Length: 172
Image (cartoon, rainbow, N blue to C red; front, side):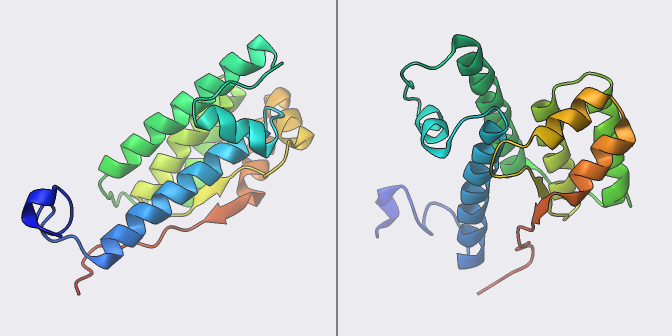
């Protein structure tokens, strides 16, 4: 690799293997989280993957298509925000962040937008991402439709968590 290739150490001074691992992990985690969100709309893995790659899915309901596109946009915005997000240490607990997000969902804000915001809030504090189920889960929608922040928070608290390892201060 040469300095003129536009990639590699000559282009990005100080980039370590750990940094590269973090970038790849975030990319894979982003795809998985997006698949999980699209599953909550009732999309199967292949249809979700097609939409994520900007391919159309034949026979898809137009309302579902536009809802899926909105979810994809939310996740792309989240991914971009995570790449630029700096760490903060304000002492906020995981529980407090989930409860605040649950109140917003209960008040009628979009589940996926709030979930992406929660992911950013958790990641900036070094906490794991709350992952929605891998398949459509009516219990999630029942919790959201209840408009009960405690019920929503209980659901989100029980979800699988993905911890992305921090690489701050790692040197080779």
